[in-house]
Image 1: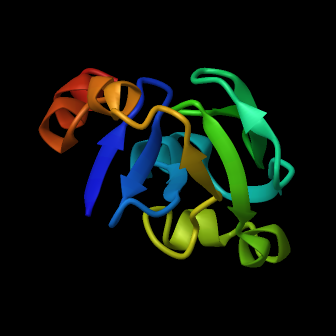
Image 2: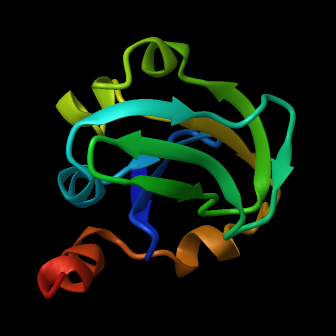
Length: 126
């Protein structure tokens, strides 16, 4: 399993060449506060890297969820839709947002994202 992070505070985990799982980082969750609503993308829809794929709303603000890699959404987290607080209690686990089938088979877009030490350094001053 490999997790990378975007500058927009999404994480993406690839395990065994299956669909990659996408969610928001702990940093994003802490900045947003209590999540009260999520607008998840439609299964079957394809997004380019950097496009808005969904929205997360909290008591403080609303934030766009950006697609960290180009790909097709193959599953959404219905449990998160039913209980948006999962994004607060377990943003890196049960609070995942959607799964995407990567279009970039050579992993170039994925490899351009930050690894965990790089993301930690990126968020230090934030």
